[in-house]
Image (tube, rainbow, N blue to C red; front, side, top):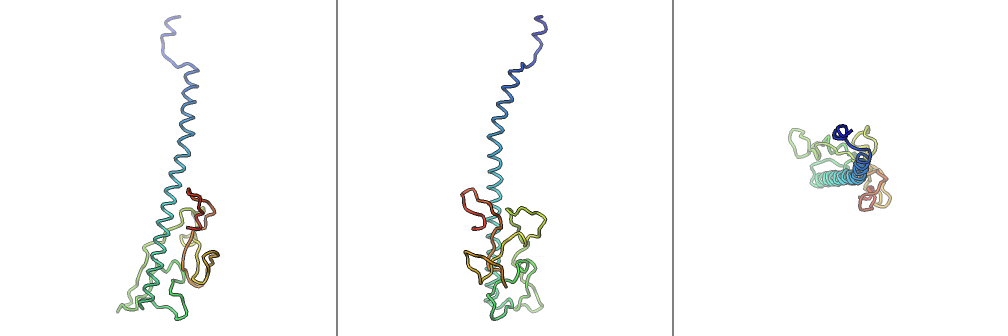
Length: 160
């Protein structure tokens, strides 16, 4: 009888206690991991918004300097987001060179549908619409997230 007890092994109580400890640690770690993922997505959203808005302003400056053709009654902002990537003809160039404002259009990291084209993941505000009620129009003055979720700080992503 003593020989059998000398053989090692875990008792049922040791196994249950170990599983309980692992369960508590996992229940603490999972929300922290989700928070880290959300924080990374928020940082990516901030970067994408800054990148697109900088390109929109650069397009407007190119229009004001006479490098990009624009109708006299237009706002000077691009008619579509894709124009920032596709480029526009440089009027100061001698051989029809193009001016590119973005290498690629970033997608909204908060948009749930990953099958959509990058430009369709953003809400677009025209120059003629108000900040409180953004609407699409003849140009793209600003972009915003279409997400209906809240950020870690409690603000809405669409208001960034």
